[in-house]
Length: 477
Image (cartoon, rainbow, N blue to C red; front, side):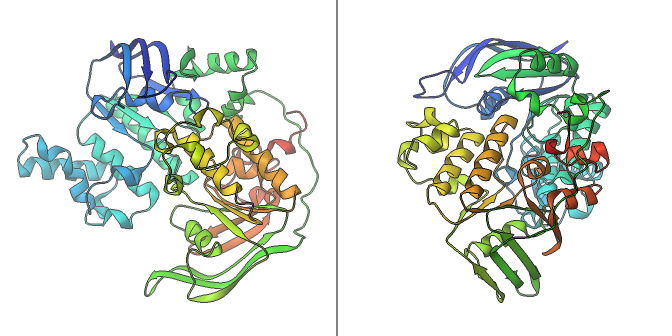
């Protein structure tokens, strides 16, 4: 039995000169687990949002979408989904309008909290939760409505790797135990690829391929598609003999571009977010900071950039500092993208030349990220701080960003990145610092640090037990 069907569906946003989706035809059976893949701005978010009529975007649509069951939808940003102060109220919010009695609602909240392991968070303020906890509360709130189809648009894009793994395991649990139909897109959860029953692959708003994970891999290999790099290492290298570069990582050396000593910062008294923190960033290098949600990474970046002032400690920066924040749309103040940045060589390289006449708030997540990045780089600062720069980026775009950052470093710039994308850090960073509980727990060259870590490390390091942390450590890739 079909859960939903797209029949010759085309869609265009208001005032747009092109279709975001073009003649889409496919169906999903009840109980299937479907992964939507494609490059940034391929139409994934648009396709998913059209399944939920209440939040479907405005625009012109042709063709027919048949949905046989109720739909629950979870967007990328948990902050935008939360509407109540406390977890208990958030869970009850949706069902309070369904005519249920107070006793029925309380029982449903209690049952849902137990299933999602949120019992000890029911009286917590939503603002106090970690990123992973917020996303889990949003998922639980959606499931309170008992949907038959669960739609998720990059639900792990703001989660650290371990939080993302726990969240994905909950999605799998819902699928397996409740038989719920799942369709989602995700750039940063490799474990989803082999789990999916079917891959729907989009290119430029069109359905380019539909098949099993193995069939999709064959398609990407046979067509030499740049999205091949999005297939997880474990799936690509299955039954393949790997040879490793045995070269030992070099010791840390170089000129310090930015240094923080004994930094303390608190949002409220007796609640330090940063505590006796020391950090160094080396000139002409990409310096990555990794760590779980809530450990203080973003706060540190705002302190390093001068947005926040520590109440104790010293920061020395040898040059001007510019920062890309997580909430990139906060940087936009104009009606047209063309008025935000100078369009030319940089925007061409970032593949956003076609958004010149569009409003910044009409962009996809990946397009907005690239526009904001161009705006930050246009300032020509000596030290560039990027907080989660790969959000909404497909694998080819990540490779281009890595090459761009390395080029900037070769020109004498210093780059500091905060990222949950450990594979990106493994490919592009020179030095990596692991942050925990408001301090830097360890720092070193990327190979030395990632080969030391067992859980919070790159996919390739896990696969090879630390023999390789990036593709440059493979002799036959």
